Image 1 (tube, helix red, strand yellow):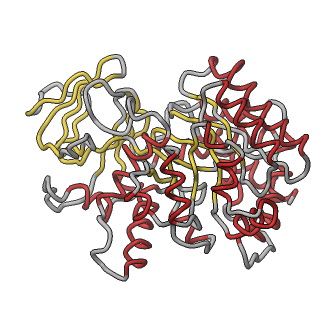
Image 2 (image 1 turned 180 degrees about the vertical axis):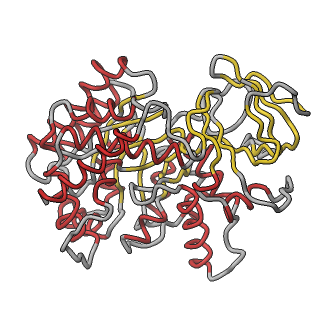
Length: 431
């Protein structure tokens, strides 16, 4: 495949933006980026901006069916939202719900320019086999995905161990059946697990050489419960349990203190920042400034809330400017960095995706940003400030156009999406 690009935002180490170039992809890999256009290009994006495929560092695909649901709950805290909404949803999920919510979410992500994601699924009544259902939904589309079952002992230690078993079963026995789906491990939170569960998860994950994802200090309940149970905040408590002996992806870290952030940095923990979710759940604003000072790798995720990653980027811009009370208090281009090479680094996939360079996979998004000229110096800012999923004209994975604006995602038809909607309605009736 050869693509002509009017403006190519590479996100390479130099954050280079090139104009009037063509990119060659062979066997899914970028083999050349050169000046000038070619006459026989397979993709003509001479009047468009081309960026790397977006990487969603933290999502919950099983959240899709809850959009529009006639829920009576009116939580006044993050913990109430978990108890009154999400844990009820978890218990109601079926295998079909797991598969179809994954399918519908992957379609939305590809339509919005996301080519790689990291998901956490929670449905205790679908064990064992839950991740097979999720993987089947993902694999019907051409997207790349890391999936996991969200381990929790909120009901029992036995249920938590079943979640760990599910992750290990998928990693060791199932994932080889899928080309672009890989498994990892996940602990829901410290406050919904026990020291025994934490230690077992670390043992299994390190044995399988897989990362562990955790929701860390998203809400104050995590801090308060840790102080009650262990006499210390979550990060030092987890450190004492040996949690950071594993490769850790910490989602949120909204209430992490400066000292806790230093501990995370000491253990090379990566952070998946979820600004839109943090706004929606009214939990606070993560101290990304201190994280950057400590050279922590930061990516960005939607936490299952918003299918438009451009809106998630703008949420980051808005909250961090507001936090500084300064309209110039946050570099807008940083949000695009987090959504591409930053998230790829968080997931340990930066040697494959996240930037447009020779040797990496041919994952692109082409954007129609309207009539204004696109200048090399301001292109990343223009993308973050003005683009939306509606501006995505093509999503390309491994050099194949898998979505074109106005069409459908490869492998998915109208009947599939109708089935997603029917399953959501059925779930509402059970809640």
